[in-house]
Image (cartoon, rainbow, N blue to C red; front, side, top):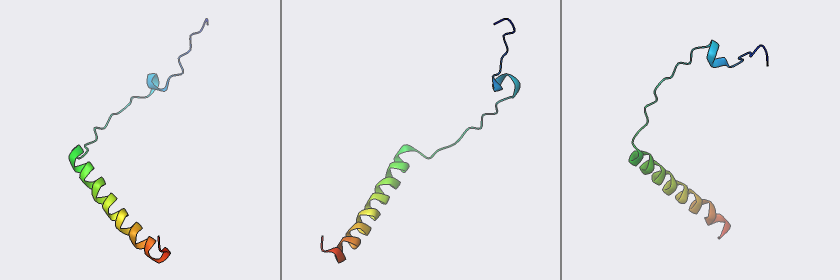
Length: 52
């Protein structure tokens, strides 16, 4: 290539990084466990009329 064009957007536009704060892993896992329990209860309620 004789012109060596650079079409990378990063060369022409400044990238702004915004830090994201997440809850601790233990809190996320506790929420997932709670949701799984709620899903299990709802599944049991749905299965009752079907006699499963």
